[in-house]
Image (cartoon, rainbow, N blue to C red; front, side, top):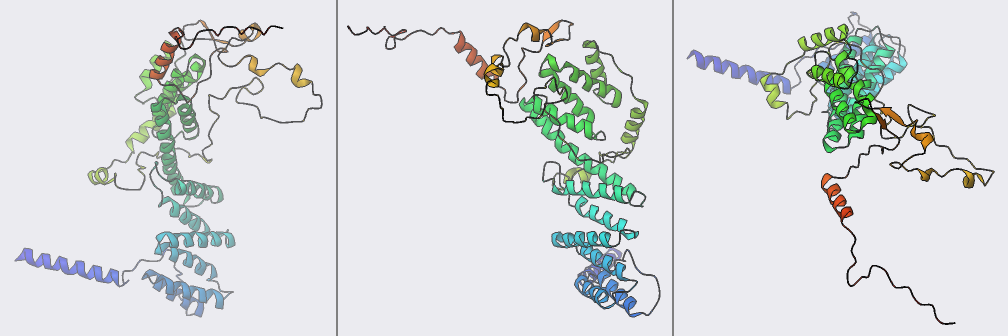
Length: 430
C-alpha cells in the first residue's frame, strides 16, 4: 500500500512538471537583471520583457524591449535592453536563434566595448560555436570559428573573469583540431605516403604542443623519416630527441632512447617541467563512465576528456609547413625560393645557359656537385644524397615493382612474324 501511494505521488509530480514545462511556467532567472527598484516607465518595460523571457515568451519579450529602445532613446537601460535581446535569441536556441544571437552580441560589443557585459557577450559568441562542435572526422566549421572567437576574447578582454574559461575551451578546441590532423597523418602513414604523413604530423607537433597524443605523433613521424631514407636521418633523430625531452613519461620514451643510441646520437635529459606537466595531466584527466563509453559512439560531440588542463594554448591557427618532398635550394635552405618570371632582353641566354634536364633526379652528378652532396649515414660511411631521388607519395606497389624487374631481366626475342631487324631497302638504280 505504501509502495502504491509513493508511485502515485511520483506520477503526479512528473505530470505536474511536464504540464508546467509545456505551458512555459518554469522560471529561468535572467543573468543580467536590473536590481534598481523604481517605477520609471522604461524600467517597467524592461522588467516586463525580462519576465516574458524567463517564461520562454521570447518574441513578446523582444517586442517589449524594442519598444523601450525606440521610445526612450536616452534611457539608462538602453544597453541592458540591447543585451537582453541577444540573450533572448541565445535562450531560444536553434540554428536560426543562435545565428541571430551572435549578430546581436557582435553589435553590442561594437556599440559598448568598454562595458563589463561586452566580455560576457564575447564569451557567449564563443559558446555558440563551442556547443556546436562536431567530432574530429567531421565538419570543422564551428571548431575553427570557436577557436577564433575564444582567441578574440583573450586578446580583447584579457583581464575578464571569462578569460580562464576561454583558455580551457581553447585547449579543448586544439585537442579536436589536433586529433583531426593526427588521424589524417596516421592514415597517410598506413597507406605508405610517408612525406604527406611527416608533413601533417610535424605541423601538428610544432603548433599544438598540448595535444594529448603528441608523443604518438612524434613516434609515427620518426618512422616516416626512417622509411624515407638516410637523408632524413637528422629529422628522425630530432623527433626521438623531442620524445625523450618533452614527453618523458611516454610509453615510447625508452624506445626513443634506444634508437638514439643506435644512431650514435646524444640522448638528452628529461625536462623537469615536462615531467611535472605530464604528471598533472594524468592525475587530472577526466575518465568516462559506463554510459559515456556506451553512448559516446552515437554522439556527434567531440570527446575532449583527454584535453590539457594546464599550459598556454596556441594563439595562432594551424599553418601547414613545406612538405619534405619539395627540393630545397642553396639560396633558401629552409624551403624553396619564389618562382619569378621576367622578359629577357638577351635572347642568347637560354641557348648559353646549362640545361636543367642534363642531371635529372636519380642520375649521376658532376664531380664538383658530388662532393657537396654527401652526408654521413648511421654507420659513419659517406652516403650520397645527390643521387638519391626525393621521396614521393605515389609509391609503386611491391607486386608491380617485382613484375617490372622481371620484365626488364627477360631478353627481348624477335618473333617469326616480326623480324628483329628490317632489311635495308635497296636504292633504285640510277
